[in-house]
Length: 314
Image (cartoon, rainbow, N blue to C red):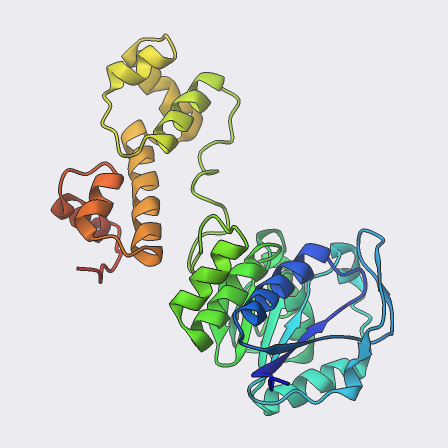
């Protein structure tokens, strides 16, 4: 029988969010399929627990029966926001977390799970994050914390926090990369059909959703065309013809509805695509520049430099 590399403890709070839990579980299950052999254990304060959708999770191990060590990992899943008013976890759970921290166990939270880490005192004076809607509450309830806005996940020594829902997957992939390298993390991401592996510093709101809080269908059409044709050059006359309005009118309406110009919008998207390709592909910088709509790698380098992106690929 293959000896496990480490144990991953998934703590199940009351009214756990299933996606916060299952997304991370799948990452480590795929890691096992690559023969990394993680022992997955599901722990809680009770032998069974209802999820926020009503599905009951049973055969759970009481956390007190475990003793996480240095190479182990704890993931505290997120839970229904209705539970934030009480946070009635077993007090011994917080002692269990503190003991794990003394053992230098890797301790992670997903979404509202950060509130449990905060209540245990593990996040005091540390950078951390949670879902963007809850950042101000986290800061107000726990003033010793250093909540980070608009970020996917944080790392402070052995303590990690993620923003919520699918960002738990991003964090789990990051931990896999730390422990087993980029190739392993990329392979797992592909198996999970994760469209884009994201870094902790990526914004919580996708760039593809930004500047789209409007109802003008013609502007949405223009935005969609730009997203799917970043490698192509197009002038204002061409774009205006797509939606049958004048170039001058398109320029005015686009700025009014999105808050930025068409050129600024296209540049945002090209930077995002370039950063993704630079981090997650083996393409040469020249090819990446062409895929992003630039004629030369020098043009891409200048744009990335203007937006404070450190380029390390040759």
